[in-house]
Image (spheres, rainbow over the protein chains, first blue to last red):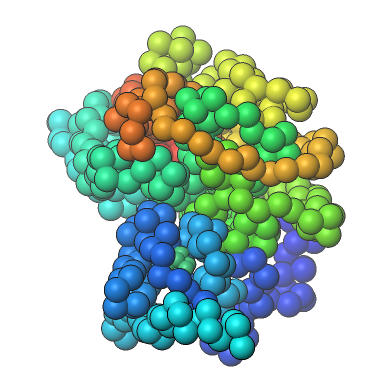
Length: 124
Length: 357
Ligand code: SF4
Ligand code: SF4
């Protein structure tokens, strides 16, 4: 019983171990995989992320240049982030806020520039 | 007079849907019949549509509490099938995460066990200590429970020297805090009354009915799958924890002492970890059959994989520790008081979602 006395006193005198949640929030760690997002300007719409995803929640339309992720089906495994060849996907250490209804992350990329134009631009 | 009492599937302390039909005579249990199948999720069937790399994330979801060790076993089996040599550093990192997982699982169980006979405060103490292990996982691997850190060919993340010192200090703190609680709980009069001599599994029974993990070790068998030396365990000093009484008390003692053993293994793994790469490139399609067994917090986990030369596997057969521990549980229940049933059922650390998948 006496071993516990120290602990009991600590519990009585010390700070509480819990937080008053909505008011005090804990800092997340740097590596925490909280939310998934992409930088759509760099995306080449190759579809690698969609192929690697274990929950198959990403859809990439190469022709229409759209990128859709059902973020409620995502399990935050970061397979896609590692597979992306241009490294335009990233996970930020922020927890997703509570949501009232299901939403999807949807991006429409800029239309692809024709090749000659690009070559010309490079020349000039 | 004989009565049949339904026990479960929902329990106040057991977050697992196990249903037991207890045949009771007055207040004594005469027979127990299990009823499973409430949480079947068909995870093994997913091999048909997911390739072997995606399966890592799926086998992790077999069980929330020991997810890291599931993927460790799967990845090791896969690497054996594809004949990949994994870098040494990855092996040590796997041991580190596996042992932090074991600490978190045992502390969770100890908390629930305390809650099982009404010690709410003790429950809170254990879970407060467990928070350290959860934070360690979040900071090093990126998530708190399903940490998705093992991949076929190695591990995902490396640890920095700063993290290493921090992990060591947190592990030290965990150990001192658990040690402070040990005497309080194990020498308490109530705890002894509720656990000593309750749900006895003799040494012969444990062997005959195929108990695994703390059940087996609590009955006096010094057997642990970590002795086979998978991952980096072959290079670390390791002794299985054994108790001889075979009752609920012995089993909780085994789990207490395994927390210390795990702390020690984390320290050893961090000290002996070599520098270098953490993963290798994986090429080829799996073909052939392999089986592997590793030690989970609850006991021995067994995987059988069959590849057919395509990127989808033919079979993923998993035998989880709780499945092996159910026959011993049914042997332990007859003869006990009805009031002791929750504590005895808890003492096998049941994980029904694991068993049914
Ligand atoms: S893998 Fe990267 S570049 Fe390819 S479609 Fe996905 S986000 Fe875009
Ligand atoms: S984090 Fe995992 S589950 Fe989520 S989109 Fe990427 S691959 Fe799919």
